[in-house]
Length: 327
Image (tube, rainbow, N blue to C red; front, side):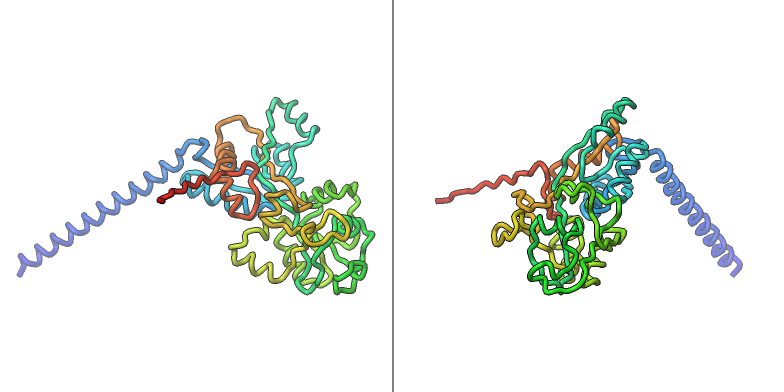
């Protein structure tokens, strides 16, 4: 009996030692992994970087970042989604080295970087558009560039002034932010000389612009088409049930084939009047992770993501199809 008890105590001691050994091995492995991760060198495909992007480009940029980080497990790209104005200011303050916006650097900004011996590049990546939206209850289907200009300049202020709107009341303009790249693009496209006026609301983001327009019968909103272009996205499909995409014509009273909604086709053919360009502005010559992410954006994979998101990449990728004739 005593011998059995001693054998049992011996087995328990051995089991305890074995458990301690396993725990030690596992802890060494875990902490060893953490030491390895901390020592990951910065390169074009490893490390961590912070970039900035116009908030209007959030959907396409998140898609690009997700794919890039899935390809390179030791790369982390943190993106600040801000206004176009703020994104470029972060570059000028040298807080970031890569910004995604809808205009290239101007001469004053280029000279600023030249004085610091920094070679700044503005690389054209893709084509987005400004989508004009109204609530689904508004029967307006088409607006001319002239009418949009009159709405934005305060010449047209009532829905009754627009035929076929089926609405009465004051027109309420909804934008994302006062320093919005969308406002700048509209000023440039319509030659408004910074004179947008009227009953204006700044919703804070493109997503909130869409929500605000859907909830306000008197509203007309202006958003990056990027937010509504991914047709396979269920959330986008739900949003398009609440708002109507306005077709835009270059000429007053134009109808039929002369009016275009923003679509992948009207972007590829450059037919939609309110198309705008997406630029990557880069200020770092080093082989950094920011440059690696830029290389991804300009690669075939990066361009395919742009295309899948319903936008037009600057350099179209080609699909080669081989047809076998068995007769």
